[in-house]
Amino acid sequence: MRKTPYIIIGIALLLFASCGRQQAAKSAVKDFVGQYLYEDVSYVDFTSVDSTRAISDSLIDVLRRQARPALGTPDYRPRSGRTLFVIRANYHVGDDTLSSTFYLNPDLDGIVAYKDNSTQIGH
Image (cartoon, rainbow, N blue to C red; front, top):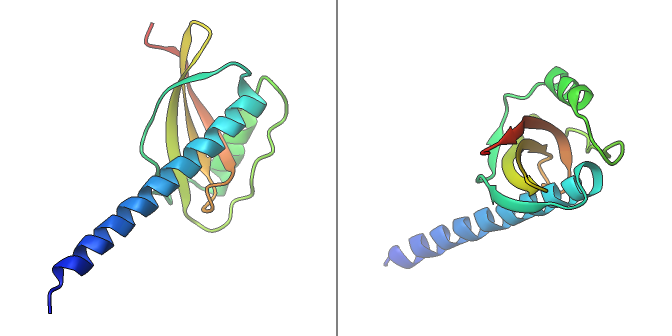
């Protein structure tokens, strides 16, 4: 019996799942940024979505308090479980290039907290 087709199918499924997670995270970030941070945004790039267990509930509270949303009070998703997903986005707002890190719930359908990494980068 040949195992090669099963290995290839397994790898393809992993790649497909990874692409799906990436797209879900990017979509959640774009929705959040457009609704709470900036109206007119063009995206430069996103890092790969990754998981983290290093974010405590107290750090989430700090990030939420430090956040300065421009367009209203964010509808943060509650944390469910110990693992969160993280993705960093670089984007243009007017002439400025900004960067933020977003922490998402395990379903990748909402932002639990975010961190503004800089006021401006890459000028």
